[in-house]
Length: 327
Image (tube, rainbow, N blue to C red; front, side, top):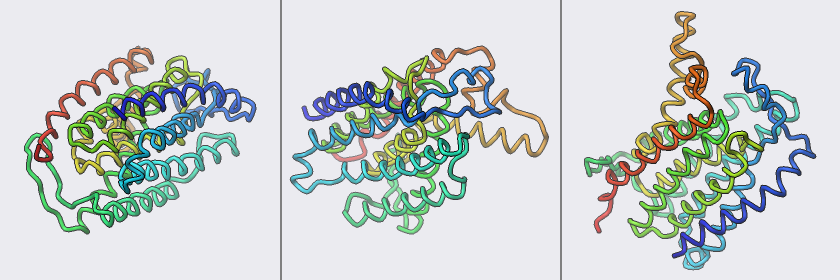
């Protein structure tokens, strides 16, 4: 099957790219700056090459061309649009990473700049998918197997909120070695399975490429990480996670399969809001993976627990959306 070819191509290209990219990033002195207010034990990671997400982005692109060429030749560009959508977010992340490297600090683009760029990308993608006939304003409710028709304007506001929120939640999850990678692999496999089940083979090819690229990246990103994906990689992953959900017309499944992303971003919001009001903290440190770290959890344990939980949620999520389309 083509999605197996896609996985193999993406894995192979990313694995080879890592051997070439990591030494290049070292020579360019593209090292990660660690936040001074972060966990003190993370300071040993200072200088680890960042922007490693380039390796799986290139690998996914190669797999889409090789395994998805038949779909492109037939004029089916659904998977291409999702990839390009994620690529725009990856480009925003790369600009952010380059700013950080230029100023030798952990702050790149301002929050307002990132938000406006991400919002523009979300709106453009929604309009494109609608005009190409790949998107409807009928909101499917997982597990209940019902759809809620919405006015297009309302749906577009909803879509923009979900997309920007998801992208930044995935970005926050990328806080320890391998975590965003490990959590997103089961999500990619979920999308592959659902796409194949729905008969949307082009999206199955894209999801398989995502899983393959991340599996190879994990060789270099698992603790102790030899490279970080940077905002280049994490924003791209966020774009893929929400882009595939909308392309499959099942965006409400994101909080189920991406519960870890949701908890990560909510823990950060709760911590900041509560501290501003009371000068006290709810968590030892936010996002929540740092809370567990300070409670004695190793990075490897966090990786295994969070990834394992996501795998279970993805299996559950499959049963929640399997009747989205008539079989």
